[in-house]
Length: 356
Ligand code: GLU
Image (cartoon, rainbow, N blue to C red):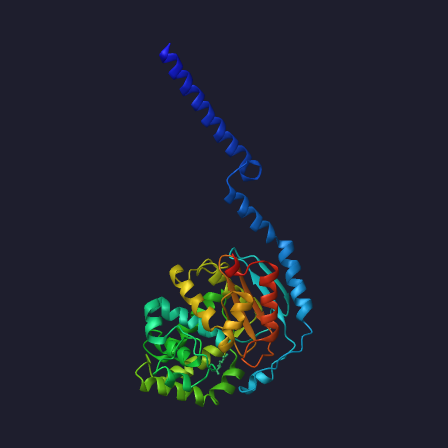
């Protein structure tokens, strides 16, 4: 009799487990009165439907396309000649889905946004600690081409996104000579974009004859013993990297590579080690939009980087890469429509990383 009760209990338990398994297998997270996290995940996914993303993208484009604010950079002559009407927005998800509108194939020079990828290369080769100790990861609070900032910080460039830190980063990319250094930097940008990016010779010619201030910066850093290669050679390679052309589409893919933890969503190639991505994004959050980076972060909450060519990329980790091109700039050097469109999209899609 005792044995029968035990057997019966075992039978009932077995049956219950089998039934529970069947319910779980058969119904999935939609119908099962499942745990709270499954429901939460689903809510987030529905808010980022394709229809919603397309609607917000169109809204942003329509809202800002006639915005006349800002003006093209003119301290590099070739930049003043770029069509200031260009306006393209591209969103790329970490699984490679592309949403875009406007002049998404129109190319401008990448300028300062190139600093992100050269910094990434240096971090990949030398590690996060090297970046922090040798170049720095703090805001300067001064313009991007400030010489005073170097003096104030006792020879430290402060971060890789001001010209001083960017030229320094370029100098630290491992290479036997400047030809190889340039080839590696260009290949790295191509890997982030998933294509061979064009080189803008007109911008390069215009800038290389007019970059005496950057030469002075590199010489000063050299005097402080902070350069990894010949300062003038590094300045020339830096000028080349700024003269690479990008479209909003290219910026979207490059941003999505960072949103996808360092793996290009289109090619599947890993271009930056996953643990280095949040380090790089932290510098973007601190100093990505020149000395107005704090206001940008306060507004949008997403790490971003802009360039005086009119491009801007913003990264929403795990969710979205955003690329915008629109040449007219605000007084800090940030694309006016680019900032407005990216901030609008982040807000309307509810993907501000600091609000998650
Ligand atoms: N090539 C530009 C310079 O060095 C880049 C500036 C920028 O986009 O902030 O002046």
